[in-house]
Length: 560
Image (tube, rainbow, N blue to C red):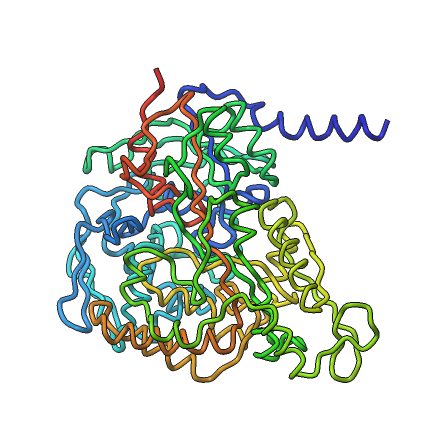
């Protein structure tokens, strides 16, 4: 009876995804970024907001194309540095909010200045280096900096959603930061239609300004973002035609392509683009992980090749020791000599030697090393339950650590507990790719690994989840941030200095490049981007729609 009840509940939950009838030929189903029931559409708390809140509802001044490294004008018609401390944005003419109120330079100004008024807003630190904003007319915004941070500014241009002043200006700080903002009013091509425990439905806004001004219109009337907690369930949905566009990392890609005629970016391995650096954050506040040499021993005990070949069937690429994503934007600043000198490689015998020298030995003959004072070591390596590829990878790593005498075991909490542990720094070792994704600058990568403010906060949403401490990295991050990106020599030099610290102390161990997993089917929609037609970066993750997924909606064609 209990077994029957469990089966009934599972069937009911997933059949409810499609209980609301939408015309199938007007609807695009997407999966791969919604991990909890939709409950937040607040642009001021993007880490909590439903995927699509930024991009579909709220828009940014620019789009960023990771394929080309170009900043594509969006709300902004153009943006330019007038001098080393002055940046001017000119907005497009004819932009409106969903309530038909014009979007003007005052809305852009308000979006920034509200973070000056309320320090709890996550980008309020911009006012440490931004002096003031001028709005000489309704379309022109002039940002005057006292201490420009060029890399961080580039990121804000395409990640910060512009909000309507007339909606938010009377709200206090608590409301701004804690409001769920149901049925958000933005300027984008979609509005929130409805939601339930397992899906979020966005509906096309028929009077969207972009259709008139730019001549583009998204093809699907509805975009449904489904909540699926298992790669296997996502795979079944694709096979049954219940999902059109998937960012899930699914197993068996060669068979899927052959038997079910599914599409990937590349025709052959690795099938997917590289988008993140998957690695291990080690908790630098927990002994013996607090020892840099112990962390090095772990790094040298891990061979990522079996993960790449067996778990992913060649669908990802092994990371180099530094972890720089293999794209033209980051590799322009790659410190090759530093990596050659300080990089690590798989060498379990050397790992054993390091542990011996540290005094970690197997004193009781159980096959596992104890601390120098004879205490047992038992570490956990965690990732969310249902992320089957990472779960398998962790098991490979656990087995490899046993070879050198390190006792570790997998731990697979639900995704909410995983993220809580990550933000609080309450873990031993955590498999992670949060914040290591592709961007316009490698500064974001180093900032994620070293983020100094994590040391002073109960929660860190930005990085340094293992709470690594090194006073030198803060000054280096700031110097890198202050260096214009076109100064390639200086940026490379600073990446080298930060890279040397990473490679010596290893608070984060790069393992492989996480795939921009992109699998589609042609039953309802066609003209998906691929290596032969690379018109858009294929990512629908939270806060990433403006890097390419929205372009996909503009280019899709109904299947015949």
